[in-house]
Image (tube, rainbow over all chains, first blue to last red; front, side, top):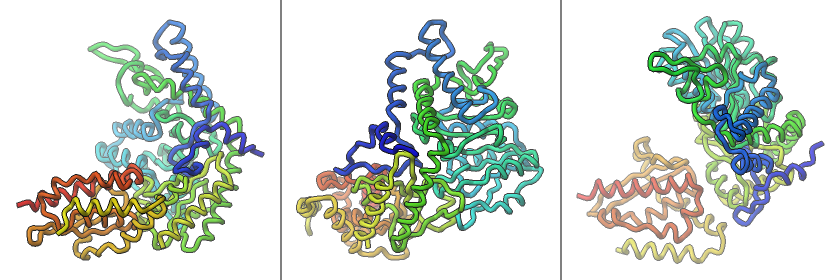
Length: 404
Length: 138
């Protein structure tokens, strides 16, 4: 059993008043709030540990490097990666995807195919469009079913010897669908295609075991799992990462530089040019510790309980339609109320201290599929409570009353 | 013909009567519902304003030396804001619209009350209205 009050006490921002009302934060899919330990770790780095990493021989540089690498090791064990050099630090999921897409751009040729899905976030669409444009490869799209799941039959039809890469999301940020990535990975591998999973919404909600999962690449962001913004991870199998050319040139990523020929450093440094977000990476460890102390599965069970409760309650409001009703779902409720625009709902509930997201959630193809301008989205984190769900539902009812 | 300034003063006075956000929002919703409809032929892609999170169509034409605006949105609160802008700017002379100081928006707390993205939408809306006036100036 989780002691939610004890968890909430670790998040200073939850004491905030918004428009004179207690903050009720249900925009966790966009970014989660940060526990004190993460805030302290970030501040402590600048107060007591600040030095550049992997460079100096002096005491502070050694300390900063050790702490930086400690996070890498923590993540390695958090996602059960085989080697710690399979963990590449990036700016975030978008950056991780771009790194992979940029690499594939140089590896693909005309006639090669990349498969993505109709439910992808724009950040897992646009880099592949750019990659195809520049390499001559073709982009194929797995269609969405009406319940917000993927059409797995069509996926199998799309797979062929030409498929070089399959890039899909683990959990849809706009619908909450948890995709059957185990099947997607196995089927793709049977055609010799590599697989990249966008795990931005999944990393703090599903236990990850990279060796079991067998994905070639897996991306996630610290800020969606209680960590700082501007830090992300690209996990890649050693061989898969080695097959990619360097992404950005600069310091730290080289073995030797001369004007005749420059050689590149080994993993992970080959992909970590320039001074990284050291404070963020160090503080990321505190976020992972926060999650592991509670237990990913315990968190998921609690969130699921809240999801069931919120779903039941919101469906009691007349005219509510939920988008994304797949059987296997994460803590996201995307909805509209008949005759009302999601922005109007979002604006009014904001006045009552309730933070929800409205819009297309950077997934315009999903909105086109359902022929809607956008949705209002409630996304749940472990510090949310049933009482907050009630406040949110009442605010939505009030908005409906004002707007009707 | 009321001047642009007179109308702004009226609107500021109307908003001063409200005690809280809820009354203000309810008034905006009412204004949105009462906004004169735009002709269907003008509700086209070309007339969409970029920068608004909800869809906003704006059309302008010149009649007897005045600029007449009509608009629509799929979000009712946005429509309310448009209704206020139209009340101030529609029927005015192009030169007056181009040089209009619209700081009354801050005074009635509209810009502040809207989220950043919405406020950007508001900025785009005003910019587009002024651009129309500029185009019709001669």
